[in-house]
Picture 1: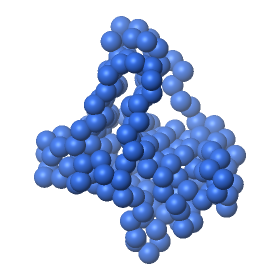
Picture 2: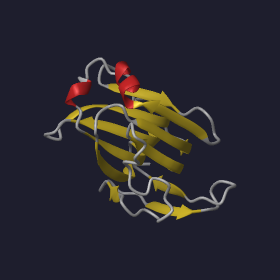
Picture 3: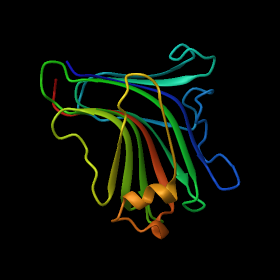
Picture 4: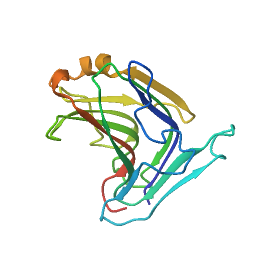
Length: 186
């Protein structure tokens, strides 16, 4: 059986003047400001917030998914420009059981224009199996390599240099996903 687990300590998108753009990015109020989504492809999932996932007193969110497709939290953030800082602390565990299926868990930033058309994405993920997401002109994959907590951060304008197929001036918003995903039925 495929098991995907994602723990997230905090998420932060902040503008140049330091204003936080993500609502409840530290999960102190559960999943308030986030929309829960699951694909209809079966399996079970749970999304929980607790202070016991990391040895500190702050809340973290955990997404646990079995079987195929995704379970995730989503938030759309209107951007004041690309001079925005992204920070996340991620811990992911991904298992495909006995079958060589693909699975990943992590944070996905989808860059969208004012018409909400997808322009490109950055994926900060732990991945396994054949067919896992790869980097290209409109997608940059940043690998989570540790089995422990990893901090990831960048300025969007700098990150967009990795996406040669995306015009930074066209980006109006980011769909931010905290996601666990797998393909196949087991």
